[in-house]
Length: 286
Image (cartoon, rainbow, N blue to C red; front, side, top):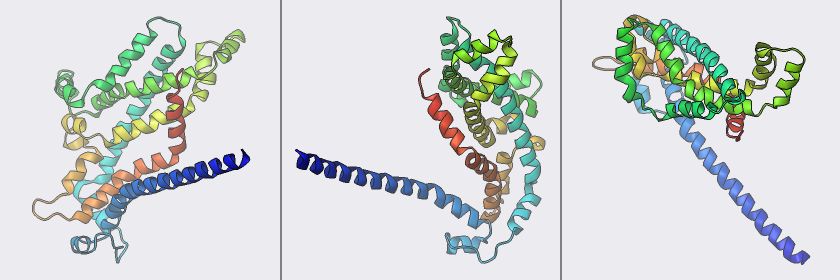
């Protein structure tokens, strides 16, 4: 019997080891698929067109910021980045305020309509962007907010409420109700409960929705193209303008892409663990 168990352990142990190596190989291959294009774009921003076409993956001979300065002179990347930060941060704040309160109402206030309201927010995932493009444009024109960033901020906040409410509601359901009941017995009102109990214990979910919303809003192109004009272009709108009419300098385009990607990469690297924790907690049934 002992010999049989040892034999089975060796077999299953070998299978686990093989499965582990296969998982590592798949993960490594997937990482290469992501890192190689990023590496190619980054090093291309320091090369000329001839060097890019002759040796695409070779390191540049000279590391200077000439192409970055040329990109700035052509389309004023810093101004466009400022507009992008303004729209993204304002949309984040508005989405978080509205989504946090709505998620608390769904997760905590006893009401038979809470599930229906949550289902209503979930339906936001089913609406394709092209289906609402014309109505959103007409609404902006009717309200005389067309080509103004304030309308885009309101639209982005409404568009990101579905994800925000669903994830935050799932996170809040994991918070023990006894904490709130104890605080109420000690004389705390609803605002004290939200500030000192719900908000601190929901930080993982809040960080997750903030990062996901930041990436989505920062990279959004279609509605920004329709609802903004030349004076209020975001960073994603000015990068295509780096192309020349006849012969494009691809190193300048690569420099613009690097500048556009840096904030997203920094946000994701800094909050990677928070994102995973929030997604796992959001997947737990409350």
